[in-house]
Amino acid sequence: MVSSTEGSKVATLKGPLLRYRVMAYATGVALLCLTAAFILKYAADSPGMMSWAGVTHGLFYMVYLVVAVDLALKSRWSIRGTILVLLAGTIPFLSFVAERAVTHRVEAGRKL
Image (cartoon, rainbow, N blue to C red):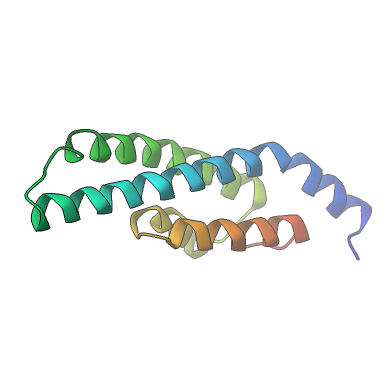
């Protein structure tokens, strides 16, 4: 059961958590597009997607870093947990897994 102070803390984290979740999904999708672009470039000699996929993932990842650090500071995560979440945006599919874990922990009022 969540106490009233923990409940109010979870309520104050709704905005940062929503921003994190949106950017985790956007970064994950952009990374999958970048992975597909690499495969097309080297396997099919079709470099067309590389012109925009890398830039898109790079921009999304920079914003992801900012919103993840913001959530980490407000949630008082450990340095190790924060670094692992930040690195999740660099491995295909891992940002989706990290997003689920972070969401469950923040909503339960637990630290990462």
